[in-house]
Image (cartoon, rainbow, N blue to C red):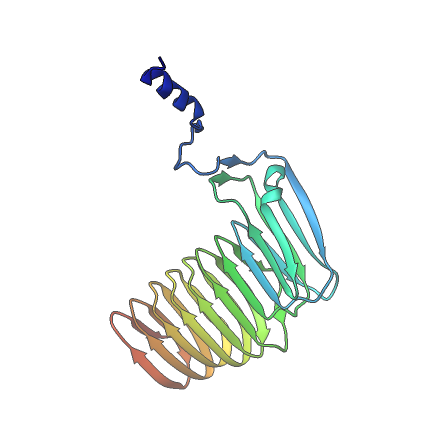
Length: 247
């Protein structure tokens, strides 16, 4: 007669055996192998949009010559960095959901100055080694804990800052800069001279702006706005927000 204990033992044999990570562990941690390698990809076409999402420190040089992307990191991390070009968009995305620790993860971009849309996510940092000169308008969007250092000379600027990182902008906007700030990091655009600037701030940090001919400012939350503007058209101040004129 087949006993209940024997049946229970057979059922146990049929159950899957979990590894030591358990059900809540997720993917195993990846540690950089310290074998730093350089991977290069040529960019054959004109681009208008750049997306960075990952733990990268990215240097970009605006050039009229050949476009390329160089990725310098541990050999065993190279497969996790996806470089995609779809239509006129270049996206560089880190694709691993587990814990990781790399030795270095630097990206060197050489792009024609036709980019009119930049999106940063993750903990990416974009550092422009020279100025972006374009006759077009430019869109900027930062989120997560991304950081941006950019010198630009553009027609118009439309920027949305949702990041907990820091942003530094320099240069000149020929016509109008629209800046929306809802992050908890700081935005220093004091050396970015806009002919006209519209600023809307509802964050936890400080944003500095300059308008050579006119400013419209709306501030709420606990934001601090430092502004250098000879002609302030509209000021709206709510809650614990602060406005500090700088001349």
